[in-house]
Image (tube, rainbow, N blue to C red; front, side):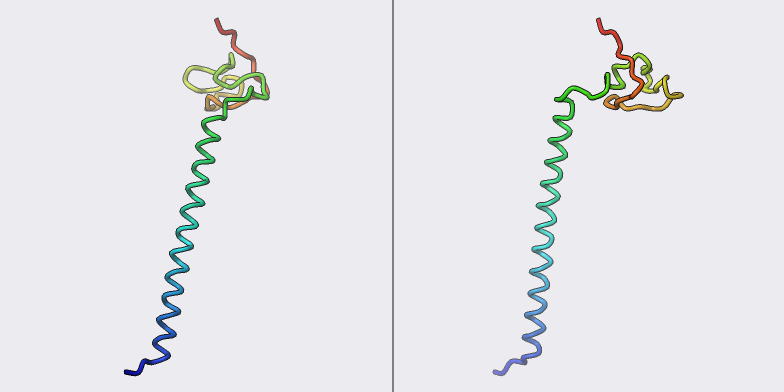
Length: 92
């Protein structure tokens, strides 16, 4: 039984292409997993160090309970933001 060399070449190229795609997907998945773990670690430890600013926005006297900043014309601020014009709230 004789085989056609052209069909063997096409089969080898196809197998190599499929293997390359599978390896590329595996590498992309591992990279994504590593990046997610790095982000999770950063989010877990973001408040370990003391802030560079005077306080976080949530600890500022000008931060309203509804999340708006009275110092900056009612901007909606996140609790972990910093402000250059912060006045730390006196805690009991």
